[in-house]
Image (cartoon, rainbow, N blue to C red; front, top):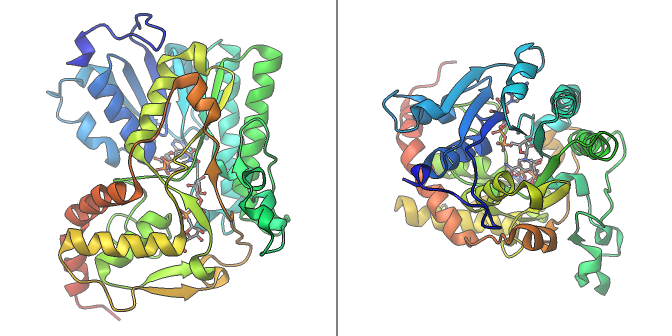
Length: 389
Ligand SMILES: NC(=O)c1ccc[n+]([C@@H]2O[C@H](COP(=O)([O-])OP(=O)(O)OC[C@H]3O[C@@H](n4cnc5c(N)ncnc54)[C@H](O)[C@@H]3O)[C@@H](O)[C@H]2O)c1
Ligand SMILES: O=c1ccn([C@@H]2O[C@H](COP(=O)(O)OP(=O)(O)O[C@H]3OC[C@@H](O)[C@H](O)[C@H]3O)[C@@H](O)[C@H]2O)c(=O)[nH]1
């Protein structure tokens, strides 16, 4: 087992086992990060969240080989005096906690702003005051829209990377007007990034900021009516999985023209582990973490997921697998969208030598295999039940 051998960092220095406070450990990214750390490193995790379902398999039974290295703390960071003590006990704090589903940004803007800015403040403050290192999860949404999106549709400049490539140290953050409440999330994330950066500059906080570009894979969000609210709207992977599982049409918001790059969660987690174990290379940096080779429009994503799911489930796809819906109908007033997201990889390449490996087809294949195995039977049961009026 890797945990008993001597681990070294990228510079060949031996690594001492760390105690890591992971806030939001029970979420999608947290669950994969916990798994990776427990399986491949000797580090200890203080896992903090209000939920633990997604890491239950890591916490029980107590006979698990890593039992002494993970401790779950059911805490809401909004109001719990134990937070500072846990930060003091740890070598490193990783903050993943956030409201981060777009359906909430325009419908629950206050909760969104509080969660992504106000609630993150004490974490930054305690790390700074106690001289503790912080890895904070921000988002690719801080870039907002591309400069190219303001050019005429047929402008050849739209093909020029100078107008769309998103660079940590160079690109501006371009959001819509205040009434477009979609940007409440991006704006709160931007302000907490600025605060962390300022704590670094003025008070010497050792920090790393991560900007994930659409990380996807098993355990992302929830399937409405199965392990989440039946009226809930998760992120696109779970929305499309839900429709495929139920043999319903996949809804394309405003024609599905927006573009995204998707990265497999297992590739992305490797980048985070490199940040954890190489503070000299990661401190003071903001890192894009995404896969620039996996770009599709949302329409193409829907088509690909439909084809992959037909393979995985053995059931033929619907004749018309998609349907167009307006953003107002799907998300309500105040929705807006990022047009295109291609991460520049120069900084993460240079500092950590990280590159994503998994193609979009392969990552959808393993993810939809997981979705099918996990949910198909439960969905069949729900569908076969008579509806009560
Ligand atoms: N998944 C992505 O592609 C992606 C993209 C960009 C940014 N991010 C950022 O990465 C982080 C993690 O994202 P995720 O996809 O794992 O989301 P997630 O919703 O699955 O995980 C967030 C976790 O934080 C917990 N949490 C929220 N508020 C809390 C509080 N007050 N106290 C304690 N726990 C709390 C939630 O219960 C949840 O388990 C977020 O900050 C998100 O903004 C993710
Ligand atoms: O059923 C659906 C769901 C979503 N969509 C579209 O698919 C695209 C992707 O939507 P997602 O729900 O995955 O979320 P977005 O990529 O817009 O934002 C995400 O980006 C990074 C993180 O900070 C957050 O996880 C989230 O804000 C959007 O254009 C959305 O309008 C559909 O067309 N149909």
